[in-house]
Length: 268
Ligand code: GLN
Image (tube, rainbow, N blue to C red; front, top):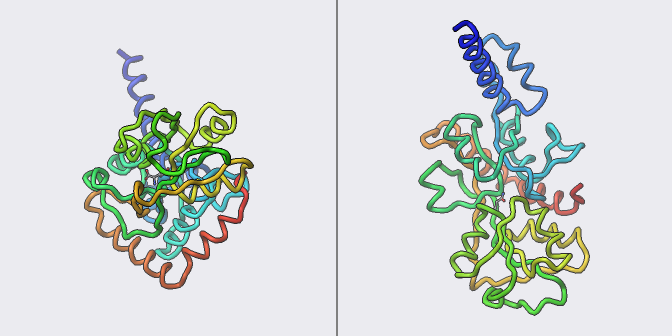
């Protein structure tokens, strides 16, 4: 019986550490444990969940602006935190679990180059758009793919859970779904796939950083997508603050400045 209680105690301790770590990434965990109540540190910190596999929006880098993370979204999150007198904390989470971690209160907000969709709107609340993109195709320079319909019968690769996957499903083509964008480029380079469908800015980044591949656009097949920040359903207080910061950044031209700056950076 005693050992049973001990196991339960250990389990509780692990849950506590995990819930603290969820928003702590590195460095902040100790600070949070020192605080007399969790609320004290929570009030000072805003924790953004992201999936650092989407350059130039979010990626890991030793010299990252915060806790080894960098990118357009990370810089935007930092602005939002500072604008509201808070310290930014980043939690790196699987893309498909991001909205669930909002629902479970593991993070305060999600910034991940996330496109607003009707399905996602059922689960969380979204900010005003801060960026516009579209899906595109990345192919080898000598590819005969000129429009989305030309993908028929080709080896198509998408990233699991991204809007690109949905677009290819809607076109009725079969495909292989990978976990990370960075895993798909070598597959294209070595001929294991013919085309990758992914967001335009990330595609541009991959094409800039790799020789022999190009982007093919098809605005008839792929609609414009708007990137938004997500909060837990009903968290109007935080959403209002985020929206106010986004408006200010748009007015002051900060978002375009940040994106320009990150398009020129080579992702490690
Ligand atoms: N914009 C795409 C989506 O929302 C991809 C986002 C991402 O990979 N971070 O699904």
